[in-house]
Structure formats: C-alpha cells, structure tokens
Length: 269
Image (cartoon, rainbow, N blue to C red):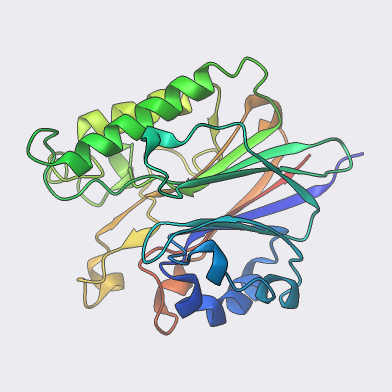
C-alpha cells in the first residue's frame, strides 16, 4: 500500500522570529513533514508546544544559541536516528535524521544545513571555506559507505548551487562562494553516492531554478539574481514515486521573511 508523502524544506533563518509564518507555509503546501534549517535556537529553548499546535506532534531537533540548528516537524510518527557522525567534530547542530513510520515501511529522512563557507573561496585564507569543503567531503564518504542506503530522502539548505542554471549568471559566479568548482563538484559527488535530484526531476537542467534571493536586492523579483541552494534528493528506489514539486516563491514576499523560500516535493512511498 502506497502513501502520499509531502516533505517541505525551508531555511527559516530563526525559528522563534519566523514561527508565525509556518501557518502560511502549511496552508500553501499542506506538507506531512517540515524540515527547517538555521533555527538559531538552543534545545532547551526550542518552542516544544508550537509544532503540535500546528498539527505536527512529532518533532526532532538539534540546536545551539544564535546560529545553525535544524528541526523536523512531522504529522507522521518518527524515530530519531543517531548513527551519523559529529560532522567535522564541531558539534555545530547541522544535521538531524529520523525514520518516518510509513505504511509501506520506514523512510529515512536527513535534514542538513551545510556551512555557508564565508566570502573568500580559498581554504588557506578562509577557514570557513575549508570547513565547508571538508563537511561535504565527510558527508560524501559517509553516505558512500552506506551499502544499505534505500528508501531515503535528503533535504536541506546545502548552500551550494551545483548546476549552470542554478545561478543567475554562471560565469560571473564561478569565483563566488556557493558556485565555485570545488563546491559544485563536491556536492555532485555527494549526490552521486546514490541520490537522485528530486527537483531537477521535474525541471530540466537547462531551465533557471532558484530558491534564494539576497536581502541586498531591493527589488528581488525584478533583478532575479537568485541561486538554488535548497535541495531535495531521493534514493533511486523512490524515484518512480515522485509526483510533484513546489518552490514557494511567494514566500520571499512574506513579512520579515527568510531570504530562502520553501521547497516541497510530493512522492508516493
């Protein structure tokens, strides 16, 4: 028996600040699971009652004060997983994973917030860039070693726009962090550990596709200088179940909103 599964992912850029926007996301996308990044709230201050009040009683989160942080809010019962390493041994709350209790069997779900990497694309001059590359490399190695990887969905703000049409100007951004060749090749190597790009499944690679527009763009729609930093991947055994996708572009105009917009994929599992 198959079951609908709608997973939304959003870099919320402060959960406590933007918690009032979640009902709008739910109304627009009707997700079964919401994966958040950059929640910026330590675990002891997580608003534990809020998800249930929104109809999402099952929650897993990892947070810290002031920055980073990830959370999964679910209508579907879940079991938290603790098998992944402490990425780069930094304890910086960039990943949470769960098993979703689906009728056809468990679905493994990973929610990632990859380091942004600073502004200078040089490992020696900018340790943040080196951390980003190391994080992606470590994740690639870990998933490559997962011989049992199946019925798995990976989402999140991966902070890399890997393809030419994932950015507004490929040539101009080749030396800009988020689209440099070491980052894009690294992310594609991670994806190639047995994942399928669920959004590009619906949108051909020769079409422009963005999920992020800088706060610096006063009229972001007119300039449309976007990047696709937010991703949904599925293992090949889930590929045939992909039914639809939504990039909630209108969310970029919500009051006090994030510079990222929610991405949602629906599949039958």
